[in-house]
Amino acid sequence: MRRLLGAIAVESAQCIAGGQNSINKFSEQQLVSCNTQNNYCNGGAPQYAFDYILENGLCMDTSFPYVSGDGNVPSLKIRNSWSDSWGDGGYIRLKRAFSRACIELDHTLTVRSEAPAIHWISIPM
Image (tube, rainbow, N blue to C red):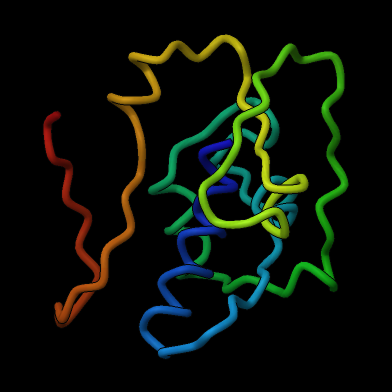
């Protein structure tokens, strides 16, 4: 899930930086299939997703669509606050093994910055 958020964060940052009204849809599946540092479907870390994107770029979702499914993993269906056209009819699925405390303590936040280079900052919660 975290690795997929890397693609979503880049989509959002590009939209904000470019003053766009719509978001380009990049391939989450590329990060799942090609980013070996992120352990394929067995978890990963956002910084590895961002490192991969910086080194390799991302293709569009139409060229490398997301093919994974729900499988046998018990999950929570969570409503987003953007629209019904985002995610799975306005919802995402989150693996049940995550607790609420884990969600609140371990997340990635994308912000726009006028920095000369990309810097990763970890802020204790």
